[in-house]
Image (cartoon, rainbow, N blue to C red):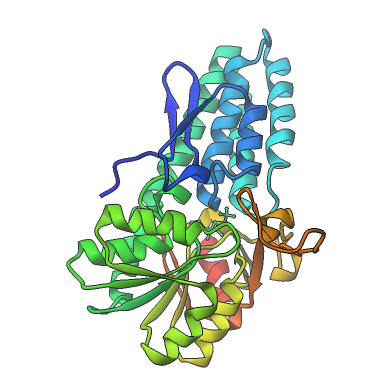
Amino acid sequence: MKTYHAIEWLAEGKLRLIDQRRLPQELVYCDYSDYHEVAVAIREMVVRGAPAIGITAGYGLALAAWYSPATDVETLRADLRAADAVLRAARPTAVNLFWALERVLRRAADPTLTTVAAIRKAVLAEAHAIYAFEAESNFRIGQNALPLVPDGAKIIHHCNTGPLATGEYGTALRVITAAHEAGKRVFAYVDETRPRLQGARLTAWELQQWGVPFTIIVDGAAAHIMRTVGIDLCVVGCDRIAANGDTANKIGTYSLALAAKAHNVPFYVVGPTSTIDMTLASGDDIVIEQRSADEVTRFEACQIAPAGASATNPAFDVTPAAYITAMITERGVVYPPFKENLARLMA
Ligand code: MRU
């Protein structure tokens, strides 16, 4: 069971985050009172994972409201819009960031809130509600996934989708931990997830806390493991699902889906409905974050590529819906045809 909170609101008006860049070597907490610093924390991946980014952004607006010097409601709402602009520029791909910001701003715009104190209170309550929604969704996802995980399952997991990435139980990782808690024998193959190693550093750390047996594999080993060991299912998270089911997730997800298709392995995308973006017709419209070449050419302080070598570093890829067996959400399991069934789910 987990004993840590990746994101925590402190009563005195501070946001506490685990610095995920320093795990598993050190468990370090950072406290924030300035939303500008929260935006930097999201960009620099102190906190990461789509639902966790959304929760954090909600609290970023709560900080903006708490510390705004505004004495009238219109000035406070203008300060919140300014904070929204800063926070939404932090990272482009995970739709949860925008979903959470829009939710909090909509709450702040409620015309029945007629005092600065009332808006501050409502903004914080909405941020808490976003956290509660994600926590509840995490739990339901685990329950909904149980029938899909056979006893003795060998499962490949990509990136990190545990409590660190989602606030509470996890999403794709919750499929594994819920089956384990239910008494099923499960074994996880943890993709290391180049270049930031969210799998080797964070997923391995979280599975250790849960007591789930696992082994780490390099991303390129997945197809080999499918062919030689036999894998029962793959589970991955999601950063944005378009209306037709195309799914953006951590780079390497698409290759894993192709390998799964070639080996007849069920491939499940797991996430809350806050990650579904019905405004985008297909994955072609999803903005893919490009990160620094240093993440590829260096390993922390150590240069590993020749000095001056260029590197291209897309942080996410889009898996076409045709390679996805089903999506596991808090509202249930969605099968193809995704266009129709996602529309029904979101109606
Ligand atoms: O760059 P990151 O670490 O924020 O990317 C995270 C992922 O791609 C996760 O798989 C996704 O956000 C789902 S988290 C439940």
